[in-house]
Image (cartoon, rainbow, N blue to C red):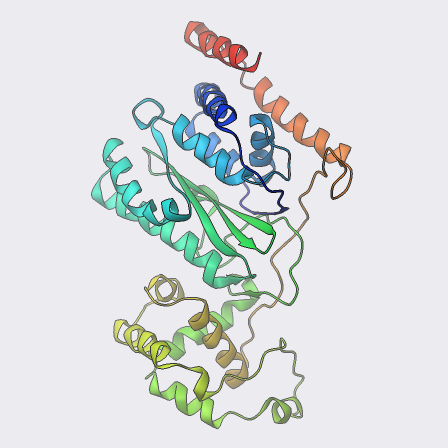
Length: 365
């Protein structure tokens, strides 16, 4: 099982209406085929795989680098999936729609006859997935798209995307592959490494920094001011007996902790979170709070966080027009083989399945 990140350059433009309408119809036929032969869990698993998701986007009519690959594919799936027929749905989307995800989960959950407790658990998962990729993985990409796909059994996957200048980074989550929201939630990450260093509080190496950050919050927030005012300068710190290996950031001084930030810390202190995940889930605890606590944990207590971009391998096919470089045929063939194998394994049996295959053939002709 994979979750991961795809880092993609973008070309401008959007899918015309005539193409998007066909994307919805083809998506519905593909979903029918997948669900009949493999079921909802397998569809979620494949959507959480950045390679398979990209192959799906290409099948629907995108070049690998086309603008809107993620948002339009998720939009087509959202319209193609009928909760009452398929037993699953897509909430959220791009921009303003992403901010309505929690309300949509509630409405769609009612359509799927989910209990209030199950709906609240799904809303929590949606909110934490977005919080982790915006606050704990500080890679310079601002989230602007969040699609939450879930089933009547309570299983879910997330496909969300962030933007940094002219590049986009896509984050995939899968409930079945998730053991911990705040430690190593991404089992497979693809993309180009980001410079300068990336604060990754989800890394296993950041466990000590997470624990110290929580301890700092559980202590009186006023103590943070005293810690900042007493800490040595970086020059003195570097001349000490132990090796200093810090990212190129200045020390956290008292002036850096704003009154608003102190108010967030005071509320967190009053709440007394039982875990780092619970701390992250609190409203108001965002990237600045996470970063400040991580730096103080390092500078004062020596518990270091990870500053390595959690990218493990690159994801790119190349462009049909040779921009930014020619198509990587071997990788492209791998994606085609992957999709062909998936379709071959989905050979349909029975009258109902043959009708679904006939619809697929009609749409693709």
